[in-house]
Amino acid sequence: LGALVYRKDEKSRAERLLRKAIACDPDYVDAYQALGDMHFQSRHLLSSIEIYERGLRQVPTRLQLLASLLRACSTMRSPHRTESVARRILNIDDEDNSALNHLAWAIIVEAGDLEEADRTLTKALRLKPNAPATLALAEILADLRREPEQAARHRAHLDMLAKSHWQI
Image (cartoon, rainbow, N blue to C red; front, side):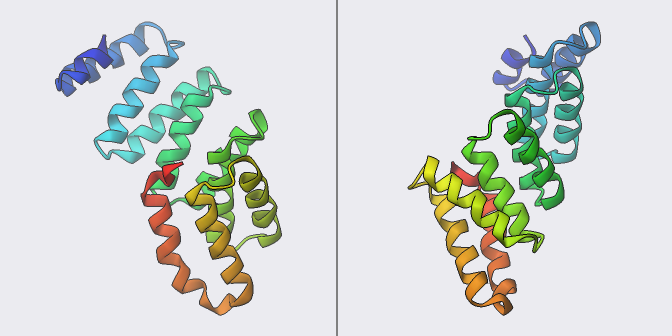
């Protein structure tokens, strides 16, 4: 009901209904999803992350909630959190292309193990050979390997990928 009310642009009423649904039934994971999405769409990223995480305490393997949490973490450009959530998703579905891209992004941004980033992108490209975000990340990684001193130049491209919600 809260999600339907939200679609009618009655946001405060929708939020009250969703919070009431969660209070009545803390295991009602769809209410966490709807409430978190509502906050995400309103650009309240920290509260959306908190809501998704509360829902995941109820059902830790719910891929839709994990994917939403991943999107919110990368939108905040938080590589550490993004990496952590991407790894959680890949423990459930090791062929999730979005999680593979987010993991590679986080590793590159953190100046982590570029070999792992390369393996991750190779797998992502094998799954979706023409995915624009994967191709862009692979190109950035190749440039970083050729010219490590150009890392600052690539920061803007990496930020743009995170901001665009990956378009995957």
